[in-house]
Image 1 (cartoon, one colour):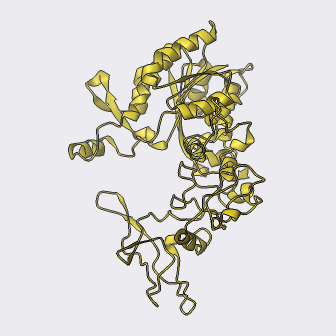
Image 2 (cartoon, one colour):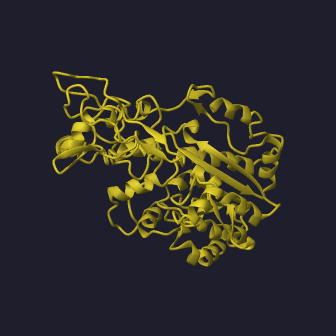
Length: 447
C-alpha cells in the first residue's frame, strides 16, 4: 500500500509505517538537518524539503507522478506539538483579552495545509499523531468568520459525512514500549472496511498487550528489562562517562555542584528532596519539595523548601544557586533532578533527555543521565535498521539525535497499531474479526 508522510522529521516514526506494509513514496520535512537523516535511511522516498504551506502543490505533484495512476492509501501526519494547549476555548479567549496569550500559535495552523493535501491526494485514510492536548486545542475557522473551533472538529467538518473517525489517547507502554508515552492517534477514513469496524466494534486499534499489573497478558516492560545489563557510566570524570566499545553509550559530564546533588540522590527520588549528609547530624526529616495550584489553576512549586538542614543548619545537597555569597534553592519542579524507577517504564524521552535538570531523566542508580544508546533502546529504535547518518555526508550531532528522539513516536508501538490497520485493509475474509469487541472493558481495566 502507498503512503506519504508529512512532518516526517528524521523518519523514526516512519519505521513503524514502513514495517507495517506501507511504501512511503513521498515525505515532507521543514528542516534540512532532519530531512538529511531521513533521506539517508529512506533513499527510495522522495523527500520534499521546506514549509508545507509553500510546498503543498509540489508534494501533490510528486505524489501523483510517483503513483503513476495507482491510488494513494494513507497519509501519515505528525504536525508540531509545541503550540498545543490544555486551555479550553473560554480560558484561551480570556487570556487573549488580557494580552497574556496570542489567539493562535502559528504551528497549530499547520493542520490546514495537511487537510488540503489529504483531500486533494485522494487517499482514503488520514492517520495523525500528536500530544493528547491536540484534542482540545482551538484554532480559527475561516468558514465561520474566524470563530474558534477545536482542531478535531475542524478536520471532521472539512472532510464531511463521507468520513468516519476513531480518536484515542494511546499509552505506548500498553503496546510493549518500555516508556510511558501518551499520544493522541487520530484516524479519519472513508475506507468501507475501516468504517465498518469503527461502527460495529468501536475500535480499529489492536488489543493492548501490556498493562501495569499484567491484566492484559503481560506487565509493562521496565527500565530494568531494557538497560540493566548496559555497562555502567559515571558523569564525574571523562574516562568514566563513556564506553567506547558501544557507539553512543556516553553521557555529558556533570559539574562539581550537579554531581554533588545527583550523587546524594536516592533511587526514585529528586535531588530537591535530599536530606542532611553532615556526619554529625544526618537528619532525615527536612521538608521535601512540593507544588500546588494557585487560584488560576496554575501549578506552582513551593518557595519555602529549605536549602539548609532545619536541625544543624548545614547546607543540603539540593539544587542551589549562589548569588552575592548567599545560597537559595534553584527554581524547579518536583520532577527535576529526579531518578527514573528501575521497575517502571522510562518517563517520556524528550529533546532534553540528556539534561539532569529535565523531568525524571536521571539514571535509576548511577550518577548520570541516560546515554543516547540507552535512549535508542528505550525508544525502540534499536529494534530496527536505522543509521545515524546524513545523506549529505555531514556528521549527525548528539543534539540532533536527542531532538529526533524527543520529537518522534516510538516506532515499535506505532507498528503494532498500523499493522493492525494494514491487516484490516487487506482483509480477504470479511467474517474475520480483527477489532476487539471487548475493547472498552479492557480500556477501563487499564485506567
